Amino acid sequence: MKGRQKGYTEVYFIERIIEEKFLRVESLSEESRKLADELATFLGLGEAQSIALCLQQRADVLLVDDERARRASEHLGIKWATTLDVLFALLLEEKLTTKKYEELITKHASQAWVEPEVIREYLEKARSTKGPDPNKPQKWR
Image (cartoon, rainbow, N blue to C red; front, top):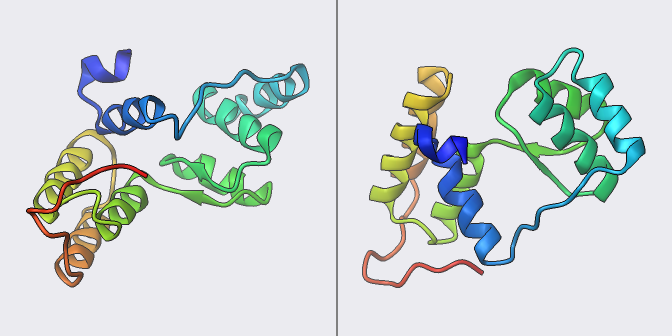
């Protein structure tokens, strides 16, 4: 996987949620493939395919960091969340310790183009939230 070779933080989560059978790999239908090709004229291919698959599967939410893809998603009526949103949700659900959360936020910020004030906002949110018990085992649902 190219992302693992580059050290992208998303790979950690994607591999884990596939292993836990929380996420499954799907293929696009021919109709969705056509939509993805249209979207790819102004989005990256991965973002375009993700949006098309989200519509095909009638998914509840799309995980996407790219701003143009988020705007396209909104235009198509798709709810979205970013990697930072997911990390914060994992912290709130006590799946990550505050220390691990801050480590992953910092690593993500070094690999993705995220405004420094957005990173500060997510770090502040963690500090104002009671983090998980460091002695409590962390697991996925």
